[in-house]
Image (cartoon, rainbow, N blue to C red; front, side):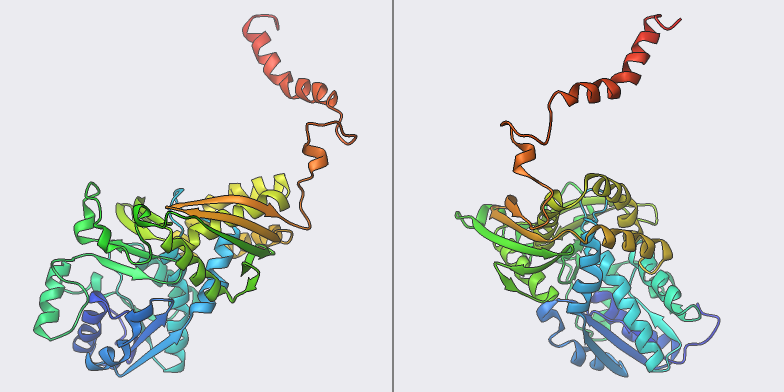
Length: 405
């Protein structure tokens, strides 16, 4: 519980099971006004009735902000310039959304003279860390209420009973007891029936993509144009960041691209099974890597790649608003100044294949790479290059054989 009594609370409100219960619980527990804040990050129809629902559940005010363009431009694209991926699989869809939601919560708290913020993350997960590190980085004196760490409920089944008791409509049932979180980059599913890592998810659970088996028998071709590491157009049509990612989601989803079943290591120390759909992000990362392959210096690329796991871990663990992430971001962005051009892709039954890439500042030169006769590269020079690189290997072997005594 808090040392200072909240006078007004801003709740990160999704309208799902947890935050619907929390909205009512905060009013009962602290006897103060609660403002419900819903961030539109691309959830679609999920937000259609959220304002009405929040008011009926007792919110003093429900604020809905369209953050789709800001989310993609200022959070997704910077991470994708780094090809950021956590534990070789996860494209950080939830991790990238939390700092933006927290930032807007703090802005609303300041505008509405609220001295507390709240979220619906559990005491076992990563999101509590992501929210609260962001809150404290932006507003060091803010009061934080984390109901899952304070209240008497111990399971989602108990929450369902509470919702039934107070006639709070929630989108989770005992027949479908998993939670989901959606934005323009992905949708995640976890909990309930998914907690057994041996059980295969039902196909009807997926929202953004068809099964690869049900995808069209004809491949889809597309071209993505990049400028300074960011995608700016699809098939020669310029699009805003949000529009572009949405279009990639549609194309990827129709072709069964981007499904992932993952057991990941949470920051708090336990393993967790999650199922994800990231169709547009999967396409974008593939295209970006291909664009870098002909426009990025080898040593710059290798240095950036060596930093990527640490950078992705920072985002996953909630350190978006940290000096170390900001420092790395500047380095990453500098590496992208030459990453401009076009990549052609083939989408087919769950696969995303690069079929072409071109750039005005391409470092790839046919005259240098050809097996035919040319004047830039003297193949005889390779002999000395190889012998110099083999010197330490030869010395080690000679010592093993006793020739160095």
